[in-house]
Length: 321
Image 1: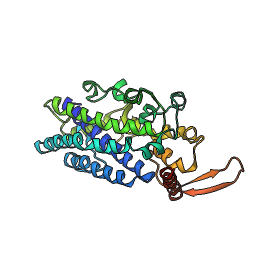
Image 2: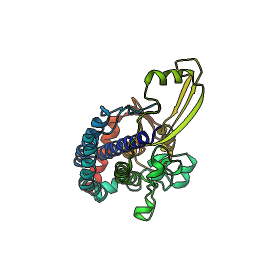
Image 3: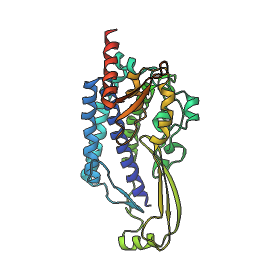
Image 4: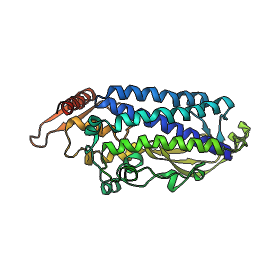
């Protein structure tokens, strides 16, 4: 892959991380009833989505990377939009950060809730911000740099480097994500300052590339540090076949969801939405769950709306306390 294409891939990955983390942080605030912070987060998110649309043509599912390079280059207009975005977040994101991390009610709703110790994070193979929120220095951009990350000097964001201690709770996972927004802004500045000229594709002629892929044979494996954590893909090609033989994906949600039972321990049902959301799960149609009262053995089905109502009601109790 040409070096310029590697830099553009890195750029898109960090733009996606900013978008993902701000969206998650806003929804986390909405979950426990901090609606003003939710709306502020959604306003901030629009800026990076506009830049992604200008660069890739899409606000979601960008499709920039392709076999051997990227589909789009950085035009002068996109370059200006990127630099304006960096200035915007440097000036505006701090307001959102302070509003949430310094608010006593927000802190009370997230601190000491859904604790995952460093030892449990290791045992249950936690990934991404979930693992880093428990104090683990894990980040593939740091330990196994790919694309242009070898030039970016990325280090894992962990709570102990900023607050001096690790709780491994929802607040620490929140802190990791919002601090990673600042880290992504720094990486984007480095990309813009260091991106070289050159080709976008290893083989610019599409028919020639497709013929090469048709004859290719073997198994490949790759992993990247997605916004939620280690995203691993394995693929097999059989020579002479136009279709992929098999393609296996291990998304980070599968690994991080294993830690939920540990996080739920000794917490109220009203905290369940916050704890579930704290790993930023991507699970289609997860609309209800079964709740068992271990003291009585009784069972009930609660919906997502039931859980959200309980979560917001607890925030009201905290405010009145």
